[in-house]
Structure formats: C-alpha cells, structure tokens
Amino acid sequence: MLKSFTLAAVLCLTTTTAALSQTYERIAVAGGDITEIVYALGAGDRIVAVDITSGFPADTETKAQIGYVRALSAEGVLSLSPDLLIGADDTGPDHVIDTLQSAGLTVALAPLGQGAEQVATKIRFVGETLGLGDQADALIARYTEDMAQLKARVDGLTHRPKVLFILSVREGAPVVGGQETSANDIIELAGGTNAAAAFSGWKPMNAEALIAANPDFILMSGVHAENIGGSDTVMNRPDVQQTAAGKAGNLIKMDGLKLLGFGPRTPEAVAELMTHLHGNGT
Image 1: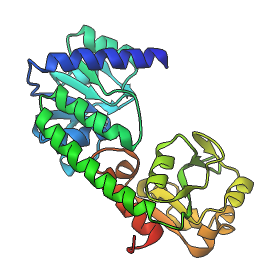
Image 2 (image 1 turned 90 degrees about the horizontal axis):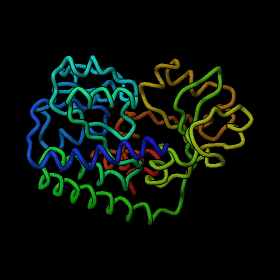
Image 3 (image 1 turned 90 degrees about the vertical axis):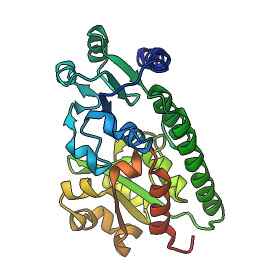
Image 4 (image 1 turned 120 degrees about the horizontal axis):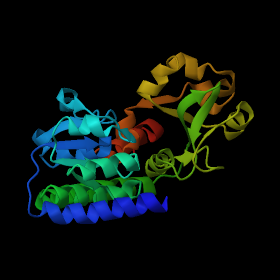
C-alpha cells in the first residue's frame, strides 16, 4: 500500500506540473470515473483509448480499448501512440506504469481516496492535468451544490431502510459490500442503512447471516444481476425469500458505474437511489 501511495503521489505531482506547459491531444484513460470527468470537462474529443470500466458516455464505445484498469498492457497502450495516460488511483500494475514512463509516456494517476468527498479532488486533478482548471472549478461548484441539496433532503428523513448491496455470487454465496466500500457510501448518502455494516470490505455472506441482516431492499448493478440469472434468480433465493426485501420483492437495479463510480454523475445516482428507497416525496 505504501508503494502504491508513493507512486501515485509522485506521478500526480510531476505530471500536473508538466501539464501546465503542454496540451495533450491523444489521451488514454484508465478508470470509468476519470473518463467521465474528462468528458464532463469537454475534452472527450482528445481521448483515443479507454479501459473496459469506461462505459459512459456512449461515445466511449468508439474508442480503442486498453484492457482493465488494474491489468493494463504496456504494449497495448503504447501501440496507440498516446501522449498521456491518465488514470484512477488503482491503475496498474506498477511494473506496467514503470515501463510506460521509461518509454517516455507521461502518466498521471489520481490521488488515493474514495467516496463522494473525493469526487471534487478527482475533478481538480483531471482539470489541472489537462489545463482545464476553469472548467474544473465550474464542475466542482455544480457538484458541490447538488450534493448539498441532496444532503439536506436526507437529513430530513425519519426512516432509514436497510439495504444490502450484492456485487456477485461466489460458490453460491452472495458477495456483499460492508463498511468502507463504495456500496456503503452510496447507501448512506441516499438515506439508507447498510445491512452488511457488521463487517468491512467485500465478503461472501452465508444464508444465516443474510437472513439475520434482514434487508428491506436488495441493491445490485443491473449487469451483475443479469450475469447471475436475472431478477427472479436473485429474489427467489431461499435466504433472500426470508427477508423483508424478498417478501416485498424489493430489488433495485441500477447502472453500476453511476452507482459506485463516484464521478460527476454521483448526485444523479444518489437522487435515483433515494427515490427507490423513499419514494418521490423526499
């Protein structure tokens, strides 16, 4: 972890300084949240390649692919002749980053951190790297105002339903998001209570624990729900059927990147989840 932090910090500082005297015209992006920010700042036309987590906006489908954010190939990136690789804080692996830099490619990695408070930091990082500081300031101002309005609505809620986020199913057991996960953060932002708050991180939950957690809602990425057989497969599980969510048929499916990516669409994600949990009267 220390090595990763040091690498990211050094790359961020040195590259941001270099960006002040250079305009990047062929940008490769790793990380769906960073890609969304580049587009939101009006620089999407400079992107030549994205990683597979970058699925928004639709224009990303026209870009070349460089693989998965945490498992990039140096050869694949360099073959596209970018003048900048800008990526999320977990872009890697480290030896690929070293190879790219040794080949003369400028690399900028976002500062470490997650959650809603980190969004403004990521926007500023991208804006400074691309020489779009004024656009970043304007986007941050809109984001901050939107999140403040949502917080005011949540502060007025009297009921905080229990929500269980299921990421996937591993050997029959659902992998769920506990504390210190993006799932926990978005649930709390929307005025819910994480039904898996008894532990931290992403972990399989056995049937007994799931029944005891008794969530009011099951929350999933729509894509992941389909990957494990669809809504009926999720809600007809014997353990889910014994929960309040199962008895009421309360399954929420949302765009996974919007929900957990913590980028410019986070206010939209919070508002959408709030409507599912509390209705339109929030």
